[in-house]
Image 1 (spheres, helix red, strand yellow):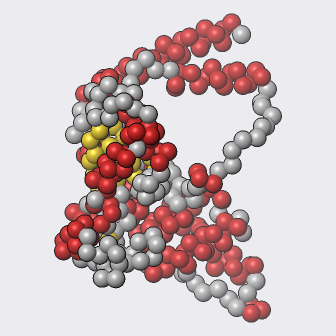
Image 2 (cartoon, rainbow, N blue to C red):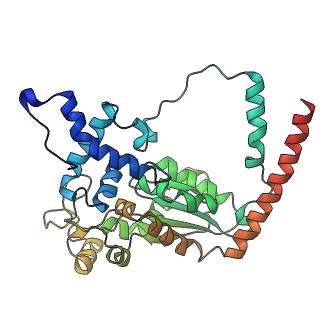
Image 3 (cartoon, helix red, strand yellow):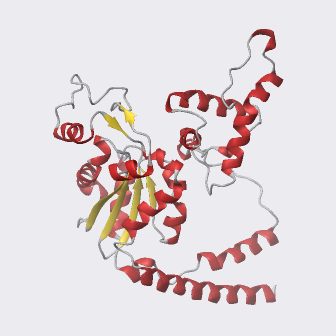
Length: 324
């Protein structure tokens, strides 16, 4: 029903293509209405796989159909998350009326005005690094509540993001905890150690005189979560270069991280995107890690302070509106 074969020859018309795509696009739009974010193109495959609409082997076909549906207007372009690395910057546009611009700016002040930070109540600065873009949107309700900065590392290798992290941590006169949320594979399991080494390499270039107090904690994805939630294990340990870590011909095959992984889990892995099947469970995994460092009472005290700030700012804005 959802992945019918397209007609060929003279029977293949725009109308027939739209008719075949419609059940799939209807299902995607229905699911999008239940999500607080737009998954990536591959992320949609995990959502649909969780609904029994496709299998892992059909992901390429599903991505092709979603792209085709977006081009034909059956789905909005923003049904998938935008890749920020491809965004256009610069240029100039005409502003709204000056009065409307001023009014909008004033109305936004209560939501930005703050006389404290959550760190003042907890004594710790927390950041989250995720390996897949889908996790940024999926976990945003939690990270926004706890005011936790989130970075999609995309393989953890960018020098600018690592140097920026060191400088941010140095601005806080307190320990920093970096929560790591990535795939369950040899690289993902060893990421806390490798990421620490990568930051050490950037210490001189960052221009800092003292290394910040940074602790690394891997949140997931863990084997227990995969089995408990019934997530999909992928056979093989293929890397982004297309080579298989489980193959004796791979240069890293005999390394300790790979051999330890193979002895514990075999030649299989699970991508963090698989959690799109159960976003609420993903939030619980992150919350467990956060609550080790932030108590409910600390969060409530901070939120009460936020509310007082917002009320004070609202009163100030109302006084300005009364004058103009």
